[in-house]
Image (cartoon, rainbow, N blue to C red):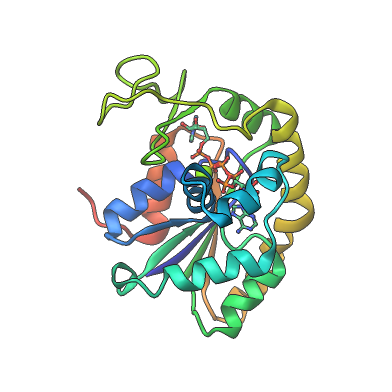
Length: 218
Ligand code: AP5
Ligand code: MG
């Protein structure tokens, strides 16, 4: 199964990706997480992309496409994968199609802007694993502490309110056109396309996604 999760910042892509990947036993390929790891490790890629990410802009298409093509060669992608935050522009989607990387299902998670801002302002992240919490909606067992490792949680550098507004603007301008792109492909029978109401609770969204993807029950 090869899936794409499409949706604005704060839609819950990372949260739902973790759930779906556990169910389907496929890796979560989050380009945002890969870039943040590169920044933390101070690799040449990390140094190159840090300023762009902190400003809430998109990293160059070629850089991202190379990163993803390399990643999906790994053995763990043999039975499929879930793209979280990729593709994010029409050229990225076209690069996938040109490389004959077929996709089975695209899920668009829809959430209004005011909810996005509320979610992102309360987000806390375990930096090493990318595990995500929310101070109110999905709190860790101990405040500001990762449930699994006991390590401290942080706030992402690009989660300041003005940067979030810029990320929303960039989403609308550069990423939302992918909705029409994939709807068109789905109409030709190349893949399935589903809209998910992302304004519900985490559990309700899990159930909705389980229904459209026909995921196995626990
Ligand atoms: P990326 O890391 O992909 O960030 P994003 O798309 O802005 O999305 P987020 O991670 O902010 O939100 P999410 O949808 O994953 O929500 P989450 O589950 O965490 O990209 C970061 C940057 O990297 C980009 O700006 C760009 O610079 C660069 N980049 C990455 N990919 C790129 C690409 N392909 N091309 C070019 N550049 C690229 O949830 C948010 C919060 O809400 C959490 O606190 C969570 O606990 C909470 N929450 C989740 N669901 C619910 C719910 N149902 N109810 C209540 N709270 C909820
Ligand atoms: Mg995310």
